[in-house]
Image (cartoon, rainbow, N blue to C red):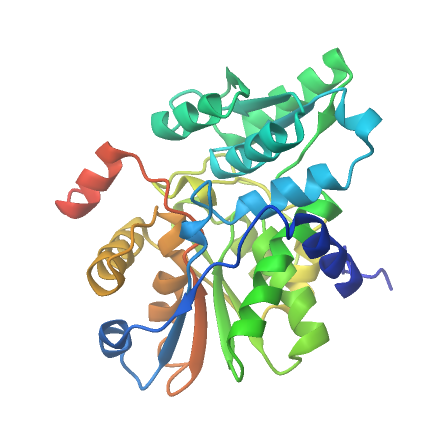
Length: 326
C-alpha cells in the first residue's frame, strides 16, 4: 500500500529550526464571548496566524521552502502562483534571503494583496481566470526562465512549513480534543495531521471548504480525486478547483470529517470573529469558525482549536461583509 504521508515529523522539526530566527510564535487565545456564541459547552482556542508579518500563516511555508533550497538553486529565481497569501509568503522570504521572486495571480485578484506582493519587491504577473490557471502560467515561466517553482501545495517543504503552525499550537495548548481547519490546497490540514500523529494521536482534525469551491471536499466524500470547472467564493484562499497529489491521500487517511460552508456562513463567522475577538480576518481566515459552527453538535462539550489563517481582506469585500451584502 502506498504511504499517504508526504512528510514525517522530523521534516516539521527541521523546518521549524530553519525558520525560527525569522518568525516569532503567534498567540493562542480564548474569548468568553466567542465561547458563548458558539455554545454547546465548546471551549474555543484561537490561533492568531493573522498576526504574522504577511498577515497569514503561509509565510511559514514560503520561509520553509526557500531556506531548504541550495543557494545556487535559489539564485535562479522562484516563481509562485497564488490568490495572495502564498505569494506574499514567498515574496517575504525572498526579500529576507535576497532571492528574486515572481508571483503569478489571476486577473481581478485582490488588489491589496497584489500591492503587498509588489511592495516586497516581487515581480507580479496577472494572467488567467483563477488560481489554477495561474499555476499553469507559473509552470510556463519556470520552463522559460529556468527558475524554481514554489507550488502552494504540491511541495514537501511547503507542507512542512505549514505543519510548524500546529507544532507551535500544541505546545501552547494541552488537551485539545479537535482542530477545525480551512482547506484550499490542504497544506495546513495535512501539516496538522502529521504533527497530531506524532504528538497527540487522539486529536481529531476536521476540514472545511467553501461550498462554491468544494473540489477537495467532494472528492474526500467520494473517495477519489476530482476536478471542478469553477471556484466561486469570496474566500480566495479556499478558491481551488482540484485535488493535489501530495495532500489528498493524507486528507483521506487522516481527517475525522470534512464539511463545506456557504459564503454567507463564512461572512457570518467573519463578523462574529470581529465582534468577539476584535481581530480582522479574510474569508478563508474565518473558515475554521464557520466549520466549527457547522460541526457544533458533533463537538459539543469539547476543547476545539481553530486558526485565523489570514487577515488580508480587501476594503471593498470587507465593506460588503459588514453591510450584509454578501
